[in-house]
Image (cartoon, rainbow, N blue to C red; front, side, top):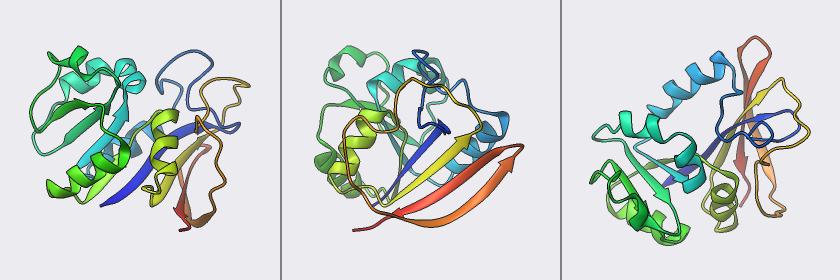
Amino acid sequence: MQVILIAAQSLDGFITRHDTPGAAFTSAADKAWFRTALEMFDVGVLGGVTYRAEREHFLANRQPGRRRVVLTRQPEQYATDAKPDVLEFTNEGPKDLAARLRGLGHHRCALLGGSQIHSLFLDAGLVNELWITLEPRLFGGGTPLLAARTDTSLRLLGTQSLGGDTVLVKYAVHS
């Protein structure tokens, strides 16, 4: 299964604006691109913090065929939000989750954040590519792209202007 880490960040590397959770800081161009990009994936994985920041969106958009999996230490807390094969909550490790999703026939996974989830999957060697939207903003603080130290080599696949001063960069992870 191909796993692609998708994130929007400020030029100084933050995926949140200061202590404000979520991606409200992103441009209209990124939001439009992101909605279209998600159509290419049959499963998305995110963490509990990201889910809580965007909970209303996820509950309103529970579409069959578009499984979303939330990694959380306490999946039982979200039993009322869960919908089989559409929105699920688990405390599986990244390798076990990826194996299970492959076994269910999923081929392409969007890794949707946050920084802890990014780091867990990257450290497990599961991330194939990173698609990072660079927003022309400087925050000086917030949630970084990664929660843990790493030394991962990347190879540039390409860049794309999304409109205005917003740029998408795509990298492959060197094995």
